[in-house]
Amino acid sequence: MSHQYVTVQWNRHKRIYDLLLGAGVVLFLAAFMIGSLLLWRGDAAISAPILIIRATGVCAFTMLTLILAIGPLARLDRRFLPLLYNRRHFGVATFVVAAAHAALNLLFYHGFGSVNPLVSLLTNSASFTSLTAFPFELLGVVAFAILFVMAATSHDFWLRNLSPVVWKSLHLLVYVAYGLLVLHVVLGAMQTERSPVYPALVLGSLAIIVILHLLAGLRENTRPSTSTTPDTPWVRIGTVDEIPDREAKIVCLAGRERIAVFRYDGRVSAVSNVCAHQAGPLGEGRVVDGCITCPWHGYQYLPDTGTSPPPYTETIPTYAVRIEGRDIYVNPAPNPPGTPVEPARFEEHTTDA
Image 1 (cartoon, rainbow, N blue to C red):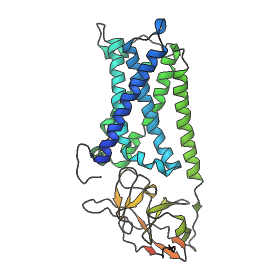
Image 2 (image 1 turned 90 degrees about the horizontal axis):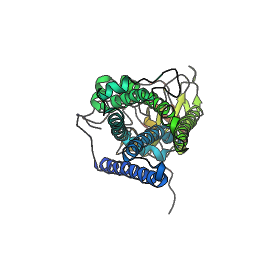
Image 3 (image 1 turned 180 degrees about the vertical axis):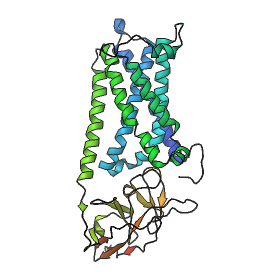
Image 4 (image 1 turned 60 degrees about the vertical axis):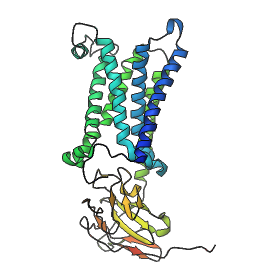
């Protein structure tokens, strides 16, 4: 999080992450090529250029699969939440590998004729009415264009100027890109490849993504939902002992926005579960140095006011909270963003040494 635009907001953790990510890509490409050279020898040997093309393609597809798995994994198990912090770096790295795959393909298959390689690619004689002759390259071109737009708009400059709603809608096209890449492989490499590696990789990856999103959706729908009436404006949402210190419980109210109820230092505060930055789930974050910290990009808010600490200006709605015994009650009517609300206080249980 930064109050002004910088090229890349690197810190020690991000540098380590990016170094590990780069090393992982290099090791993946090396392992793929060495393994292929050992498996396919003699008459079945594959030339080095084609091996590199395949290696970059498989690597990019695997990276995109991992990116799409991070979200549901984090909702199923909080231990995956740290992976969300650097997901945009992961996405840009995926685009770079995909760009290498696209460039190598274009040069190898269309770069030695008299026609411009891109024109040659877009005007090949494939047939849209035949599965075996379908121009699968075009599916890859569209998917690559989506990845390019996502990488080019990954900086907060575009998030702020496009607005969070438009920016997020644009980046949800990653699912369209993934579907196009699945078809790109099914109608392309799998048509001629006899090895079970490609079908297992593509269909297995697709199955994993679908299952993870279904499981995360089912868990979201099974969260306790509470209804309210005009006669009972205060809603009991549980006890203080159910919430780990400096963490939150996400409350689903019928017909209303989710509320994140945070416990911290003997106090309880409630705010909107939606981060003002990119609509991230604040309830999946933690209270760090006295501030609610969004798990997506580290945006912070004071629990009792819903305002970001200076010089930041983001605000989120707050909710009135009270405690009776150990029970927590929340008034489901949101206050205007940035409204101060006195935290509800309780006594921490202590144990004798």
